[in-house]
Length: 182
Image 1 (cartoon, one colour):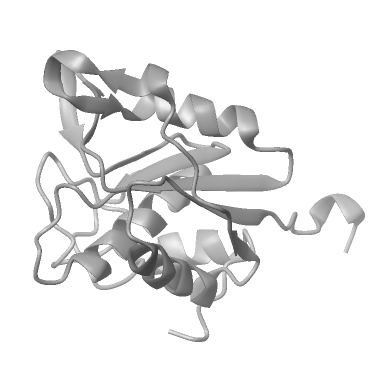
Image 2 (cartoon, rainbow, N blue to C red; image 1 turned 90 degrees about the horizontal axis):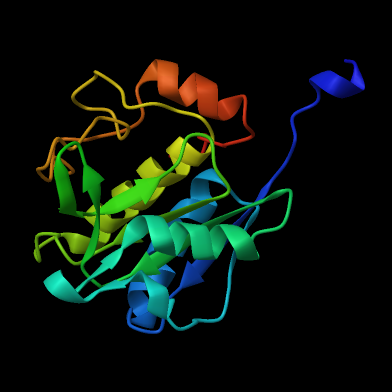
């Protein structure tokens, strides 16, 4: 194998914000480490003040990703975890409430548990986190209804999602993700 063909191994940095409960972070981090062992949980930090959108009492996901992006060095991807209500511009809606946002490809993404159903929110939060991390690796939304990479389309379909589909999984394996432990 030529050097240029080798898989570049990144480290996923799990960046909790101070508002999220440590046990939530622990649960999501354990899930991420099962499929991407090269992950590390950072100390909780304050939310960037410039991300606050006063008119709706929310935090802008794009501003937060930009903040995380600036803190993320080459060879790393950071996922911010929060319990705050986050939003992004979606088509003509300037401030659309979302569960997560990740750029494709990108060095940072964010997941929020604010909009999740209370009964199995840990599982849903994990699915949102790996969905956004999938975007940072270059994955688009997937048409498969059971796939973690499907588009939420303004709803919360996480209870229907069971795994990454074969196509998405194969792509992530090429990016050094491990699925043997699932």
